Structure formats: structure tokens, C-alpha cells
Length: 143
Image 1 (cartoon, rainbow, N blue to C red):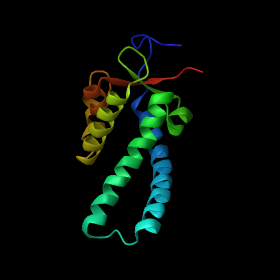
Image 2 (cartoon, rainbow, N blue to C red):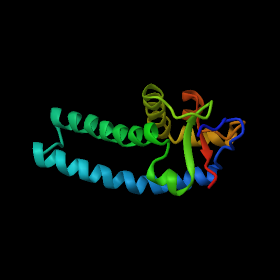
Image 3 (spheres, rainbow, N blue to C red):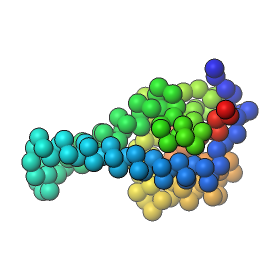
């Protein structure tokens, strides 16, 4: 069932931040397992080319984690718990290109002193900066 984004309400900032905290716990577990596997296969990855490959690998693991959920249902496990769904401006699930753009913008926005979150306090619709730029929305899912 497709919802029109104009009739769906944006998830509150408080709910989105709570979901992000929960998501952080899940992501740490995913990265822990991915790191363990990488280091078991390659040995020390603290310097040189292995360190760069390791960093790219972890970013790839994160993208695979998020995009798999976003493309399939629009919801990660944390988003399901907090009843939030990622959709495009028409209320539909996003395609891979849009997921990639949102992921990169979110990484940059979060890494740049949390600029993407700070933006939400001043945005007219309460959107994160990466959602505004990627033309996506986090909406409330009504049970």
C-alpha cells in the first residue's frame, strides 16, 4: 500500500533521535562482527593499505546494512521499533541510487559536527539535512 507523503506526518525529531540511538547499538554489533571477520582473514589492519581497505570495507558493510532495509521495506530494525519509515517525496520506497545518496549525505552530515541533525531544528518541516537534499522523508507509521 502506497501512502501519499503529503498526508503522512513526519516523524518527530525526538522519535527520530531515539531511533538513531537504538540504531547505533545495532550498527555497533554489525560492525563488530564485520571487523572480527576482516581481521581474522587479513591479520593486523592498523596501518598501511590494510587500514584503508578496512575502512572502505566497514563503510560498505554499513551501506549494505542500511540499503538492504531501506530498499526492502523502508525500515531498519530500529525504525520498525520506533514506527518510522523512509520514503521518497511521493511516499514510495526509495531506489538504490537515492539510498546511496542519502547514505553518503548522512555520513557527511553526521561527521561534520552533527550538522544534519542541527539542521532539523531550523528546517521548516523538521527534516534532517540529508533527507532534504536526498528528497526523502522519515514518516510516522500508524499501526
